[in-house]
Amino acid sequence: MSGKKSDHGDAVTLANILRTDIDQHRRLPADTELAQSITVLARAHQDATWRRNRAGNELRSLLREYFPGFLHAFADRPGGITAPEARAVLAIAATPAKAARLSKPQITAALRRAGRQRGLTTLAATIHQQLRLPQLRHPAPVEDAFGIQAVALLATLDAECANVDRLGEATAATFAQHADHRIITSFVGVGDLTGARLLAEIGDDRTRFADARALKAFAGSAPVTKASGRSIRITHRHVKNNRLAAVGFVWAFIAAGCEGPTRAHYLTRRDHGDRHPAALRHLYNRMLGQLYHCLQTSQTYDPIKAYRPPPTHPTRAAA
Image 1 (tube, helix red, strand yellow):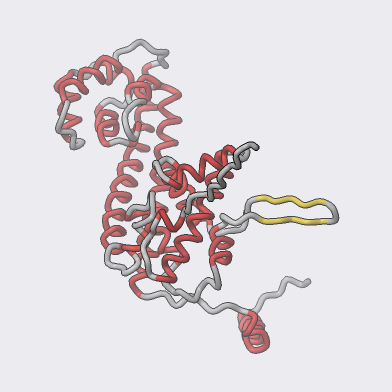
Image 2 (image 1 turned 180 degrees about the vertical axis):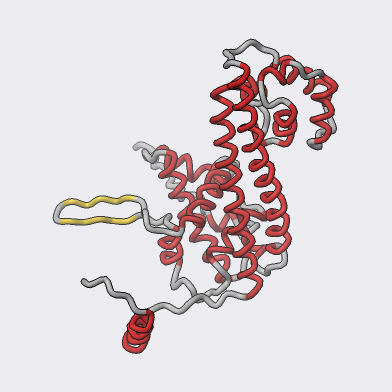
């Protein structure tokens, strides 16, 4: 191969492919404009969430090097260091030396700026005590350098947290306008943001997937069978829609924790020998087929129809 490239030649090649093999190619989904706008917002919110997690991990890794006491102070708080209270305190005390000089009124004011309204005095006293606990220290100039880097990472984290909140509100508001909102959110473990991500990747073109098996393969929940001679191996799919697979794991994880048939199905798979990820994939595969059926028939989720109780066989009395 010479490696020569020509835009004209590429265009001719693509035109010939469509001219001779057009019946072998699938048309693009005919989603509505509202569904396309939900796709844009849901993907933007998902990207912002991933960036927030990455920024939080970078900041956590940095604090572990020179300020582990701060991580310990907010280890049991919801959200950890990504919570507004933790970010507000870190903004005024980026080094152990500054944190040790903080007073309770200063911490209370920072918590109030973060939006905290209840339990300010108790929480401020707890944080004040934990930030003063002895820990291994770096030399003062080194701590100051770490503090400057932490403030820079904190600015990135603050921006991504604001983006997640802003895009989340826009995504939920737009998704609520869609006709499939009622059907998708009727499933266990599906809220506005999770449902918006599901609709964003599935779309509202009912002819896009030939059957539920096609949707499951697209989502990566259906297993793959590799047979060669006497060897038969069943594994999970690696080629899939990664966004749909990510939201599917969250959906299955939440549904498995809710009392009802979804948790019973998850526990049944665990009893059969499946590990946690495999059991969640099996549950997601089951719920995805139910979602496909409900969208095709325009009906909401009914757990009684979705998970029928196993048949009971009466035991014969011993003669």
